[in-house]
Length: 295
Image 1 (tube, rainbow, N blue to C red):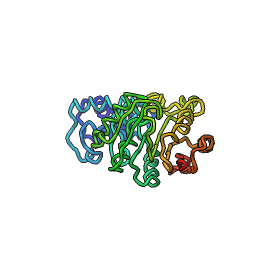
Image 2 (cartoon, helix red, strand yellow):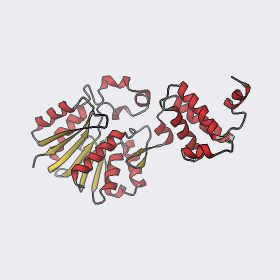
Image 3 (cartoon, helix red, strand yellow):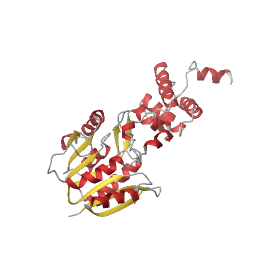
Image 4 (cartoon, helix red, strand yellow):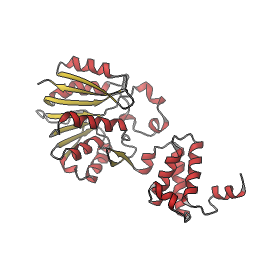
């Protein structure tokens, strides 16, 4: 390594933002982080309050405080802490949701679930989101269905607090009732929803250690662990939902890509659904099941 590179790496010579991106990319690449360039850009952009394009337009050097902040963020990402937790937010359905270690990071597959729900539900007025986590589904549906009243349920009070903050961020928290409970236990007897939607844990317990480190080491275990077969909570919801669904109402559930047949069997066992539809994700894998309550 030449003298100039050593001085730059140590932060002794002031460098423009673009050079710091190159440094950050090298650090993340060495740590095996996927997409190191993009992550370095996003982390530095957050420090400098710029967009990623702005990094390459800025020519003045980073101050010592900005250098130190960027180094600290790169160190966190080197330890495989998810980028979204470091930044404190994640995109979902055209909006940004606050996220932290109490909630799962929203995934593109769940955006597809929302898309498919809106195609089938014809703007429902009574919606229940089970296992709301960050509230990305509940808040998005409240935003997309302005006349709807939404109930968001989660067993984690910390997750509900994060979800409620996201509801307030988009001005829909007053149309969402937040309930800390298991599955549908917190709903009053006689309540009937037109739509129940859920992204519950569906990873089998034995598969958790094999997940990428960003997931296994940082995302909340209780939001991932679906029991011995990955279906324990989904089975509970399939059995409980008919009591809370109006006739013709829809239960929409995100699933693992090998679970469609098992969920079909669960639905048949209840005798309460007269329609079962499996929808694939953009990769062609089974990803969601739609169950229609018998009228």
